[in-house]
Length: 94
Image (tube, rainbow, N blue to C red):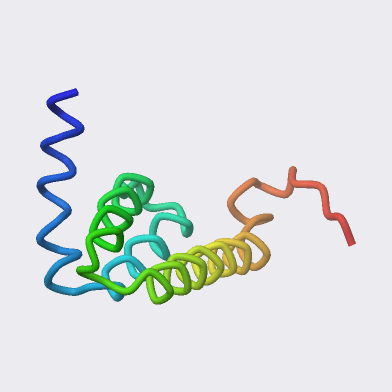
């Protein structure tokens, strides 16, 4: 539990300083496939939004947009390079 508390304490300054832009970027890269603490970041940002430090509506919209953009980038990369990476063993669905 102390590791989680340390992680939350480490993420809070980023959300305070950069706001929902940090949430958008981190969730975009996490959805794209980078090993980033997206869920933990959302917990910290939710706590800050409940205290009124950041806008709840902006948080929800940036979290949604970051996730959709990251998933779309990952899909497009897989669509473009998937067969090359898998050596032609990937089944094509269309």
